[in-house]
Length: 405
Image (cartoon, rainbow, N blue to C red; front, side, top):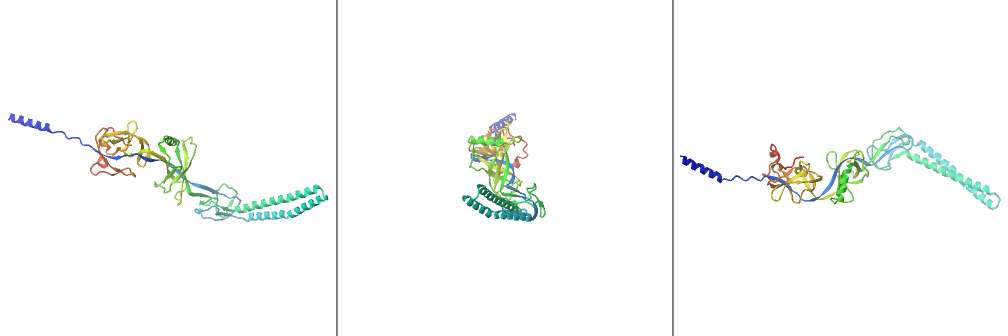
C-alpha cells in the first residue's frame, strides 16, 4: 500500500510539472490614428453688438411740435420727415427778409445810373473827383445792402426748413420722446428720437495683450500663416446657436488698457434680417491664421503628469504602450491642437487607458469619435468594454496612465 501511494504521488507531481501557466492576455484599447494637418488658429472672445451708425435727433429751431410724421420702430431712409414744428413764425421772418431784399435791390438801378452820369460829367470837367467818389461809394453801399438782404433771406429759409425735422441717416428709428404739442428748443439735451443703422452691425470684443504677442511670435517663427488680408469672424449667440453670416475684422486698437491688460477689436457683420440687435451678448470666433503640421488630439486622450505637463498614451508599432509629453497650443471643438509630442501615424489611446500602463503590451482597436460631443461613435463590437463596464472598477489607474482633467 505504501508503495502504491508513493507511485500515485509521483505521477501527480509529474502531471502538474508538465502543465505551463497560461500566458497573460493583451488588453484591447480604443485608439485614433493621428496625421499632421493645417489647423485654423481661432480665438473665442466675449463681446457686445452695437449699431454701425447712431444718430440722436434734436431740433435746430425753437417751436411747438405740430405733427409726428413717422411710425416708431420702423425702417426709415435718410431725408425722411420725422417731425413738423409750427412754421408760421419762421414763414413770417422769411417774408420780411424777402421784402428787405427787394427794397435793397430797388435802390440799385438809381445808384448805378448816378455813377454813370457823374463819370460822364467828370470827363467833361463839370464835377469834381469828390462827387465821383461819393457816387461810387453810394453804389457799393447799395450792393452791400443787397448782399445782407440775400443772406438774411437764406438764413430765414434755412430756419423755415428746420421746422421739418428729417432723418440724418438710414436705419431703424426708435420711440419718440415727445408728442404733438410739446415745446422744443434749439439743440436741447433730450433727443426727440434715436436712429440706429443695424445693417451692417458692429461687434466690439476684447483680447489680452499676451495672446496678441503669442500670435505675432508664432507668425514670426513660421508656425502660423495668415490666410488672407481679411480676418474672418464667426459669431456664437447667447442661446448657443451660431450666426449664419460671416463677418470681418475692421480694426484693432493700438493701445492696451493699463488696468486690464487688454485691447479692443471691432468686427462687422451683415445683418439683413435684423436678427442682431444693439447690446446683445455674443462670443466672436476670430480666425487669426493657419497653424500647419499640427495634430488634433481628442481631449479625452489627454491628461497631466505630476509636473503639470500634458500627456497622452500611444500604442507603438510593436504593440507597446508609450507616454508622450505634448505641447498644446489651443483647442478646436473637442480636440487639443498639438504641435510637438506626436508623430505621423501615432495611435493615441482614447478608451481603455485604465487597463494599461506604460511599457505594457496592448492591442489597438480603431474607434471613431463624434466631433460634436467628443464621445465614442463607433467601436469594434465585443472587443472593448463599454463605459458602463468601466464604472464600478475600484482599481486605481495604472502607473503612467494620464490623469483626468
